[in-house]
Length: 95
Image (tube, rainbow, N blue to C red):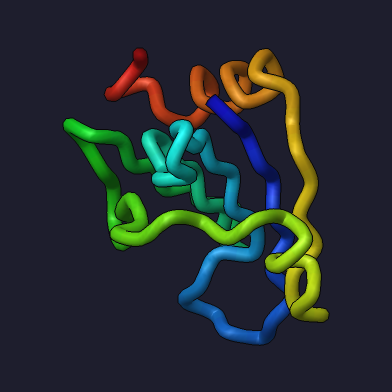
């Protein structure tokens, strides 16, 4: 598994400003958290999702490709850090 943390700089009120994803070996999302400007957090996994948050249908690009767009600032994250966020924000779908 790979874990990424991406800041999305934009002015859209209904879109997340931070996307945190767990990716499988083919770079498909298996779990995702979306953090919104108003403080709400959406989550998605194979068997549950909240609000407008869903797992992507295509592989996530490499961090270098994500970071090539000035709207995005992505970094790898430790699995432990992802788990802490997941347990805090996705309680109904703990894995």
